[in-house]
Length: 160
Image (cartoon, rainbow, N blue to C red; front, side, top):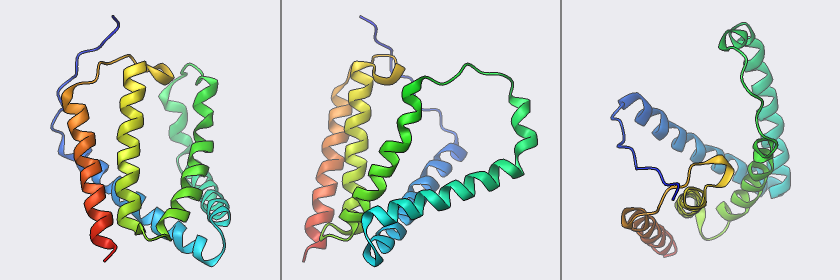
């Protein structure tokens, strides 16, 4: 069986801070896209978000272009790696719709986290997208159950 042992998490405070900051930025993005969707449509929110994201990426590329050549040649990415934009566009459209529903921003983010955990566990289990197969443990299922329970509490407490 082609399984990989679970590696212990290295306690690097900077990585944890970056991950937490990214989560905060994701929440801000979903909120701002929801406001765009409320003013227009979820599809408009997706177009606007990806248009401004493209401009921001081009500006960053222009600013850091001279550093790009110092990383060396790497193997080309597999074809399916370029399909991330499709899931990104769908995420913006669907989260823009969900955030403007009774679920609200906290419920959308909590359920989104549950979806991320479920998909990533499946990807590990079956070795999707070039990941090495990893057996799921009771700890994985417990984490998902806790996130789903928390999501339910968030949604139910917000609906009063």
